[in-house]
Amino acid sequence: MEIGVNGIWTILGAILVLFMQCGFILLEAGSTQMKNAGHVAGKTIFTVGIVSMVFWGVGYALIFGSHGGSFIGWGDYFGFDVKDVTEGATVAPTVMFLFQLAFATISMSIAWGGFAERAKLSAYLIFSVLFSVLIYPVIAHWIWGGGWLATHGKQDFAGSTVVHLTGAMAALAATLLLKPRIGKYDKNGRPNPIPGHNQVFTTLGVMILWIGWFGFNAGSTITAGDGSFFGFVAVNTQLAAAAGAVAALLISWAISGKADLSVMLNGALAGLVAITASCAFVESWAAIVIGLIAGVLVYAGMRMFEALRIDDPIGALSVHGLAGIWGTLSNGFFTTSELAEKVGVGRAGLFYGGGLHQLGVQAMGIAASGAFAFVVSYAILYIVKKAIGIRVAEEDEVIGLDLSEHGAYGYPEHMKQIAAALESETELPHKSFS
View 1: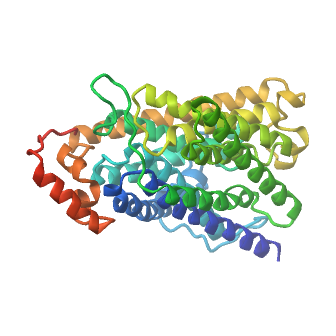
View 2 (view 1 turned 180 degrees about the horizontal axis):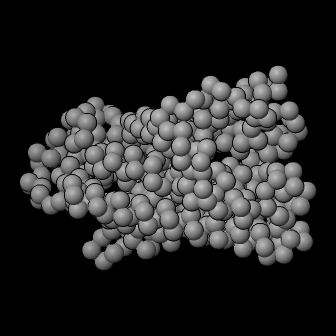
View 3 (view 1 turned 45 degrees about the horizontal axis):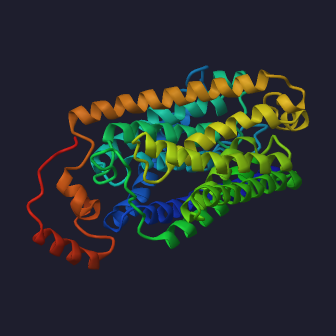
């Protein structure tokens, strides 16, 4: 009976996490230009398809394989027998597989932010496969699969490091190799705004992600027997998101004189990302503090990356990278001894008498995981760049990836406007960024 109830709860969590992809479709399509809307939306389905098959074949085994070591798991590849329920299991293997699969698809969607509006679909396909084999499973095994960081007591309840920082570091590697979009910086290096085409889409996308995050965090309790605990995790999730949204809006308003809605939306997401590691380890007042700081960080990060000429159209580096780092570190400050004992991972944080130990473990996990994700992502993309190129030609980027990569626009009526504009201009140079 218990395993059945747990299975229903965890499957619901998996469905909510998969539903987050709907949020990514709206958020990312709305945050980019109209000429790329169909491409941006469609690649999400492409991502879920690729990652699902690769994760079934090898990804899950590399995380949770029955012969796992400190660095990677192995065994049980390609069609492992998920039908068998081992004695003492709290949830069926089929259910756990689907739940973990949903997390892997989210990390790849985050990574895609670094490719937005200028990458070849072929390069994205190759990277999606290799990310799902060589990058995400390794870090997930280190922390969730009994690897070396797990033995040190690294706390990451639902994936501020495993999912969000991993995806963000891959996005950083991609955007560094791809270079900024055409028109993002003038000849003097000053940034030009390239606004997204639909702010209503981005707003609705964030709200869908916010709702789906309850599957992300509360669903990660796996067990449903103690309803008060997953409710507690859900409350912390809600409070951190709320604090992040408010803090980001207020600081943008105070500094720029305008209440920037895009900053507010990213602030909500930053609060969610930050609380993901600590939602089961901290008291609710700390969840608010974590969200407030995440909201400030995302505002500062967006401006920092723009000043550094790092073109991040979706804001993945600030939302998932900086907030992921802060959220992971926050455990080292705010984890209570009672909650650490309840979850069974790590120790109390600095503010609860645990000294610097847990903070040190959290920092070590960030450094190791972030460096691994960035270096391997950069190496893969560098090889792909040399082999087939990773950026579309300039003329293809100008007309948009909807037409150049897919042969149709997400907004077909826009095609005539672009065609008319191109006819009136001189021939575009055939410069390639590959």
